[in-house]
Every structure is written in C-alpha cells, then in structure tokens.
Length: 319
Image 1 (tube, rainbow, N blue to C red):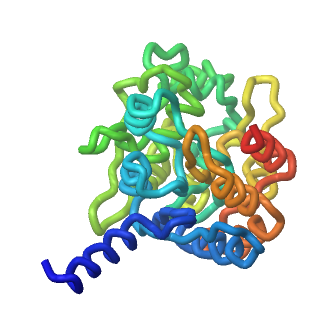
Image 2 (tube, rainbow, N blue to C red):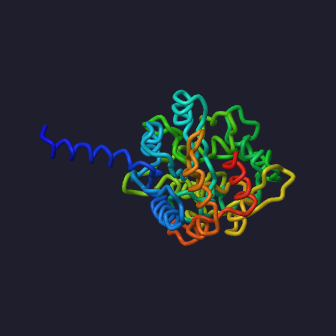
C-alpha cells in the first residue's frame, strides 16, 4: 500500500470513529429533528467538546447496538428499552445504561410516541377506569372479566369484556414499542392474558392501532388501547386514574403535557453508566430552556417536560 492509500485508510478510520474530543451522537427517525437542533444549539455554546450526529438510523434498536459497541455516546429513544437491550448492556457493562427523560410524548399524533387511550364502544355507559382495574382486565389470571366487575349494572353486568390489543411479540422477539411501554407501566411484571384479539400493522394497509379502534366500534362489549389520533365514530375514550380513588383524567393536551394523564409517554436520551463531562453537558443542554424550546418547535409534536421532571432528571445527571 502506497503512502497516499495508507493516508486515505487512516482518514476513513478516524471519520468512522469520530474525531478526538468529539461527542458522538446517534439519531433515529422520529428524533432526527431534535438531535440536529440539540447538536446545533450545543455547539453554539462556548464548549470545548463539540457534539456531532455520527450515526443516523431509522430505528433506535440499531443505534443502541452501536452504542453497546462504543461507537456513540448518546442515543435518542422514543420508547423504553426492550428487556433484551437492557440485558445485553448489563451483560457487557455490569449494570443498566441511564435513560434520561428529555420530553413527553405527543397526545394525538398518528405514529410516533403518543399517549395511550383506552377505547370502548359509544354505547358503553362506563366513563372511567383505573390502571389497577385495567391491569386486572389485561393480565393473565385476570380477576376482571365482565363489565359488571367494573361497576356497570343491569344488562351490562354479565356481559363479558371483549379485549383488543397489538400483537404482543414481533418476529424479532421484541414487543412493539407500545406493548413494551404497557408491559412496564401497566402489567408491571405480569403476563398478558392469552384470549384477547391481537392486531398487527397490515403492510401498506391500516395500522394495528387503527384496526383496534375499528373492532371496538363494531362490538359494544369491546375494550382496546390505541392513540387519541385514531378515534372514530362509534367509540369513546375512558378517563384514567392510577387507582380507583382517582383523580381521573380524560387525557387533554394539557393533562398529557403536565404528565397528569397516567398513560402519557416519555422521550429519552440513553447514555452510559459513567458518562463523561461532555455527555453530561449535552444532557443539560437538552433539559435547558433552549433545549426544551426545540421540542416545542419540532414536527413530532412532543411536549417539553414539566419543571419538576426537569429538576429530577438534572439531579440524576449530577450524581
């Protein structure tokens, strides 16, 4: 190999690794705009270490693989880690990575990371449900199988609840992001019951979340989860609370933004167990007024974090 060829190989290797003194960030499709805005804003500060998006992937899963290999220091996640991802990182590094909240998911977008709504047929007299009750509806070895067990009287008391949800596992072995969220937020370690109707995205056809709401519209006994953006005639959404004692929240934009609505979702930046100073500084920028303003201006319609959530995330980074 001549000197010119050797120099070219060396230059490509340096580019692939990221230049010395550079914070290497990944980008995923739904977070591409934010990662670009955050790196631009961060680099406008008088910081010694610039940040650059060195890896662009469609899905966070591929970016996380690069993160485990040490190719990037920051990965955006518009969902929670899959258990398999967490296990892979723990096996290599001895403990889990840090997921730092940086935004709240949208309310009523189609696709992306949006709040989860609970749909019933418009003929159903029920108006609200708690997560405690919903857990017993969807979990295996359920204690709630009829509408009467949710408080309905008369002809509804003995009607069996007909359940609809997304396919629980994809061919990869991982759950869809919404299923993963509900397993962690709702089931809290319990397994899904096996007798509910599972819906999957139909290629170029309707999404599984749309099919769920369609099914609820045609069956007065049905209950299913989806997004507010998939609402259609013949259905309504239930107000939610953590426990039967309430308070119950119907899921307005304000309630989702304030994180009062129990099934509001979170957007994260994933960093290592012992992040360096540049990584911490980048997270602080994302949590700053300028970083949060970028969220409000982004096309994904995520919400900036409430002040108390920002304070908690900032304390976690300072440790």
